[in-house]
Image (cartoon, rainbow, N blue to C red; front, side, top):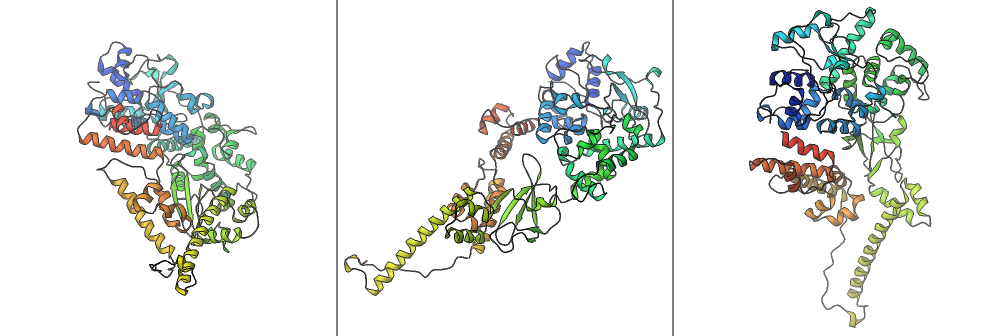
Amino acid sequence: MLTFFPTPYPDEILYSTFARYHMRSANSSIKDTLDDLFGKKTVISTIDLPSHLYSLCNRISSSNSSITPEKLLEKHTLYPFYSPFLPASRAQQLKEMMIANNGQSIHMLTGIISGAICTKHSLYYCSSCFTEDLKQYGEPYFHRIHQVPGVFVCPKHNVWLHPFKEKASLNKHEFIALPLILNDSLKYEEINISKKTRNLLFQIAKDIEFLLEHGIDENLYEAKTMYLSQLTKQGFVTVGKRIKQEFLHEQFQLFYGNELLDLLECSIEGQHNWLTFIVRKAKKAIHPLRHVLMMRFLFGTVQDFKLEATYSNPFGHGPWPCLNKAVEHFGEMVINRVYISRCYNTKRPVGTFCCSCGFIYSRTGPDQSETDAYKIGRIKAFGSQWYEKLKEISQKNISYRATARALNVDVNTVIKYLKLIETERLQEQVEKEKNLYVRLQRTGTVNESKRITKRRKVSSAVRVDWEERDLVLSKLVEKECQRILHNQDEKPVQIVPTRIGKILGKEAWFQHYKNKLPLTIEKLNLHKETIEEFQVRRVRWVIKQLKLQNKALRKWEIERLAGLRKNYSSLVYNEIMKGISS
């Protein structure tokens, strides 16, 4: 346990905080400092993407309980600069590696090794920030923004950054602090560039600063959709949806100029350059600096791009088509509202479209073309009209495959629902025979030896209002799901349709009448938990119970009480670590 740890200053790179700790600890050896901070003497001092953050936070005393691995990662490393432009799974893996004690493949994971541009070979500082920090905090420190590739000037003071010490001359286990007094020999000669390039460097630094401080909610590995939309608006796309690459390259070069593009190592010379790939289907990660250039070119600033991404509809503007081939209005724009959620794993938007005919379908967005509006990712409910059409077709002597084509579903779906129809017909036949027997009893035409001595009470058939039943049942499902989610007194149970059906006593309805209960089925699908989601909720409940009992939070005990097996996901692991460190 550390007896003290310096609180990181605003925008301080974590490397600088470690260096300040080393100075104050009075340790004679950097190995002793590494042992203090991480519990091992072999950790490599990394400036941009450090690891062992959980070990560090675990050793910091409770007086600095506000310091968490996630906070350090987001506020004091370059993780927010790289993560939005990686595939979601790789960004999550990078986060886990930085928090855990495995930092060996971090730079390879981000593509920094193979696709590095504008690599900084020194620690950099701003002379104006140096003076301000010394006055406000009593000591200077290295700022995170000044260490980002592509940042040549300070976004606050618009002055050139100065190199402090070459990275090659630094010991891999060393932490160097910014001294109180700087030697004149460290001062930097300004690059001789045009006024236009100088101004663009300042604007790009401001964009990167915004990206670090505010982030972008969307995963931008497939930012092509946003780019394509804006390229279309600005006349860079043909009627046939092809990008005018020559025109795009010409305008991009005029906008930035070769001087800036060469300085940032972002030249667009040659046929297969990064600008060509950034608007194509994502196959490899593009360096964040190049995304920043694209955002500024198309949207004005990174902040403007974020606003556009926030407010634009990933499925366009309605109405949207009904894709139920069993109804007359198939393909017509009759759906006026889309319910947008987010995929738990990919974080991509998922749109659910509900038609008045009872047909409900969903697909993962964002849409990349107008034809995507006619695609179905998953059918959530068919509706009574589709069911009746299937009954009608089943009377004809046609194959399963032809039936599937007629209803725009797969063969297995046809077979499944035809079996349900047969079950329903059998029930109807039994009911008819029962009613016939009763009628024959009344007329006396049944053999006397088979006459039932006690007359059964026969009620007249009542037509079921399935729409009303669906509405009432959907409200009951919502109420029960909310009760389970907010019940802190009992051990959590997983929300799955079968459990909800048993609780409400309507399990058979959920199995046999799905097509007549579209609203109810939608509610069930909305609240249905995956095993991973349920495990996260169960971990939270266990941690809360242990805290209420004033018990120490131990990883093994949380795993045992939450009933977790050894192969649980990284998301569940992060929830445990988050609970322990909070």
